[in-house]
Length: 275
Image (tube, rainbow, N blue to C red; front, top):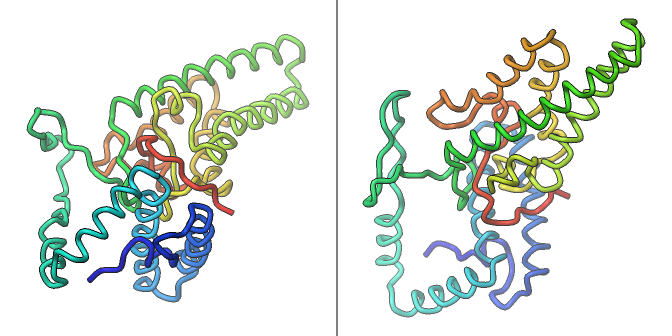
């Protein structure tokens, strides 16, 4: 029989949420080291798989409603189902590996005709943010920061001459503002203003936790540099194309998420902040 969520995290079934959280964090921290510093690809892949299962278990046990439902299933299934039969049922219930879809091939649809949604790679139990929400979040963030960019640029140009000092001041101010808007809230809540309004969020691809400062910075550094470094609207257009590169990729994992090793998911649970 496969181990339960409690066994996976390393606690007793009657453990409190604080005890489960503490054990979960210890396991996640140990696995993070294996993922980042494993001696072989096999060891790192194994650590990623165990991290995904651990994260899935935590999402269930952290929610009182899901935990109660799971406890009911756990107590009932242990007495009514033989181990061999249960393993067979689990194999039958396991989803088949997703077939890679072509760029212009329509997505499979459910019984109501809606496009099938899929679990983002590496974040067990989460649901990948749909196209419409992600585009809406990008639009809100671009419009917000576009207005800030134009306002700051116009202000500094009006009060300072076209000198090296003015250019340095402008670049520094924009760099701080963009980091304050994108990087800082992503490490705190996983959401910029656009993502908060559209109920999606950024999480760590390995653990499902909130991104660390390093990963959030890697995720946004290229668009920020493009906006600040390239002249006029060229920088804005280049950053926008870089930011929405996921639209053209079947897995919906764009260049920003590849650099930061993050995923964008629907905000239906509150991930832990890395310690």
